[in-house]
Amino acid sequence: MPLIAVLPGDGIGPEVTTQARRVLEALDLGLQFEEAPVGGAAYLVSGRPLPPETLTLAKRANAVLFGAIGDPRFEALERQLRPEAALLGIRRELGLFANIRPATLFPGLESATSLKPEAVAGLDIVIVRELVGDVYFGEKGRRHNAEGLRQGYDVMSYNEAEVERIARVGFEMAKRRKKKLCSVDKANVLETSQLWRDVVNEMSTQYPEIELTHMYVDNAAMQLVRQPNAFDVIVTGNLFGDILSDQASMCAGSIGMLPSASLRAWSGDNGMYEPIHGSAPDIAGQGKANPCAAILSAAMLLRHSLSDEASAQRVEKAVAGALAKGARTADLGGSLSTTEMGDAVLRELV
Image 1 (cartoon, rainbow, N blue to C red):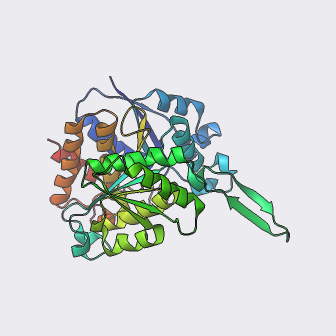
Image 2 (image 1 turned 30 degrees about the vertical axis):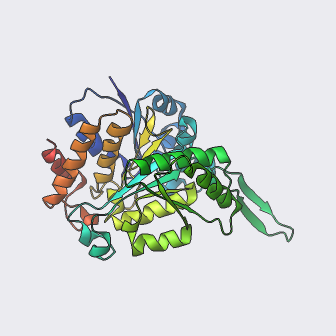
Image 3 (image 1 turned 30 degrees about the horizontal axis):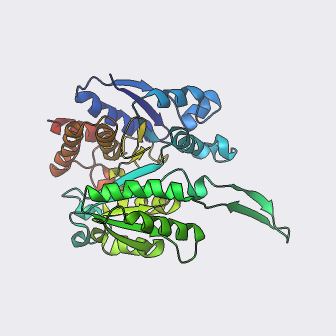
C-alpha cells in the first residue's frame, strides 16, 4: 500500500492540500496517508521548521504531498529557523535535484491571463529547474568590506556533474514531447553559466534528435511574455528557474494553476509534489485559495512516483472539465471557495 506523506505547511497550504487529498482518496487506489507539520506550523510546536519526525516520514514515504510554507511572523528568526529552511532541507535530504514545472493554459482561461489571448492560446510548456545548487545552496554570509561597509554575499556555483544530471532530465523530457530544448543561462557574464552551457552542448551529442537552443535569461524572460508558445521545454538553474516559472504562471492564467514535481531522476519514489504558489498569508483561512495547482500536483504524484498514468490523466481531465463548466475561484475571476472548487473537480472525476 503506497504511503503518501502529507505536509500541509503554512498559510493556504492546509486548505489546498486538503482538496488534493480529497481527490486522491476519491480515486480509491488504496493509498495510505500520514500527515506531519512543516515550516512555521512545525516551528510553533517543536521550535524547528523541519522536525526529525517530519523528515523521517518524508524519507519512508513513496511520495510527499506538500502544501506551502512561509509566515511573516518568523521573518526575524535566524535563517535556519525560518519556515523556508524546511523546504530547502527536504530537497537536500531527499536529493530532489530536478524540479518539473508544467505551465498549461486550460481552454477557457485565456481571458484570465495578463497577455493577449492569441499569444497564449494552447500554451503547453515545461520548465525543468535545477533545485539543490546555485546561490540558494552556495556559501553565504555577512561581512564588512575594506571600507567598513556591511556586505552580504551568496556564491553561485555548479560543477559539471550537477549540470549534466539536470540537463539529462531536460533532454529526456524534450524527447517525450516536441524534441525542442531551450537551455537558459547568463553565459555572457557568469562563469557558472559558461560551464553550464559548455556541459549542455557536450551532452547534446547524446541526443541528436533534440533541437537544442540557448538563451540568456533576460531575453528568455522577455520572450516568455512576447511569444510563450515558441518554447516547449526549458532547462535552467535554480535561481533563473525560480523566477521564470513564476512568470510562466501568469501566461497560464494564475499562479494557482501551476503544479510541480521535485524528483531525484526522471521518476521514482520519494518525489515531492507541490503547487508553485506560496503560503499567501493575506488570504489564509478565508477559503479563497485556488486548489487546482495542488490537485494537479497530485496528478503529477500519480504519474511520476506511482507510475499510474491513467489515474493522473483522470485527475487532469477532471480539472479541465470543471473549468470548462465555468468553475472559477477568485484568482480566475470567479467566486467559488476553495472547497467548492474541490467539489467541482470531484464531480468531474470519472
